Length: 534
Image (cartoon, rainbow, N blue to C red):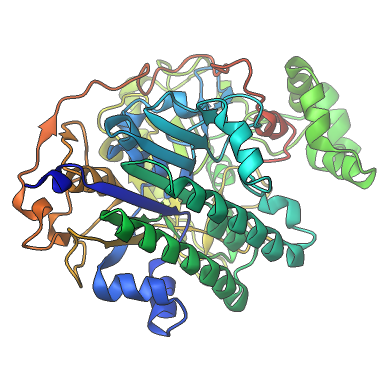
């Protein structure tokens, strides 16, 4: 091994929500020359996501190489023993990420990294960053540098804000990507050994606009970004890895899984008694309140940030609605879906109002699995849901979800307590699918290689080994050694491992659902209490 191999660099380009088959078809048609080059001259194939296939779980799994039961993230929100929610942050990820094992590292716009960690290098946090006042960068002064170098840089755009004006979204997103590309190229010129840069834009666009022409224009812009990354990797004798956390596809119907539970007698909505009954009779619900605020041009986000938490809770509890946090009678409920399809049995040992004895859990899970697999689309008589056992998906964490309920192609799982099982998705055009992408190119990568049964858990160990860095023994993934050229140092070198103790309190610590950081202004969570978001 020469000195250059021992200091091999890696450039990881993250693209959120890219579907493998669609990307490959566009590349084959000559629309995406840089993607086509990686497929022809490097390694390429599908990348299986987590179950559920969700950003909150998948990116930490890509970064750490471990399952959610080890890194501790099952959804954007952490569920407490009292059914309260709080936002998961980077401090909740209980295993070391790539950039904690390799230095110097540059990490930009990675979801679930706020607040920025004190790594040897630079970090700019991504999705779920509440603001750019504090915790946005490491070192802290980097935030001012970004404003100076790339004043148009934004953390992200919320596609929900463009529901009523979707035609404006592509141009707004193109501007965001252009600024992000400018920052990427600026940072690439500095010193790094690991460079990990994420673009969440494809996910955002596809949620709102599943249109071939619009999507292709966006992917052409991303292909140009990929061209920059290829050039930088070649100039630095680095291996380039391009990965997505999950795929994407169109949806035709929502499936309200907590309504399924309610109809089957496993979940009991709160009865409309007292004040709730009066408000219900006159049609005053969370949805109507939000609609009225919108008609009067009242900024609900701003309102929620100014209201005390206790007041938001009282309003949300008293006003009837479909929110699983506030509108469920937990002392009469045996199971509920929290978020992203994660189902919890309301057992007596885990939850404050639990009613299911531990000895009954396994039998109840079997009943629930049968209940969900029997759900059929009334128009096609097709089965719409798949169910996975939490003990099999998350074997090391007793506090993990008991089941994971995932939609089949064309459907989207919603946890809200709708009056019907199925509903029209409206402006929500598309959502996550289990199959993302894996592309690679570089001095150690074999031309025309195809990863075998690759998953998001394999990314971290493969990147580490390519850099001649030991792989933690805790990883659940494997080194995709079939990608390495026979004469490369990565192929010749044996896989080294190291025992590393994870940081943080670890997964499944329960708690009361309170925030771990008083400065984290959780606007989205507070709006959730009013039914504004699920």
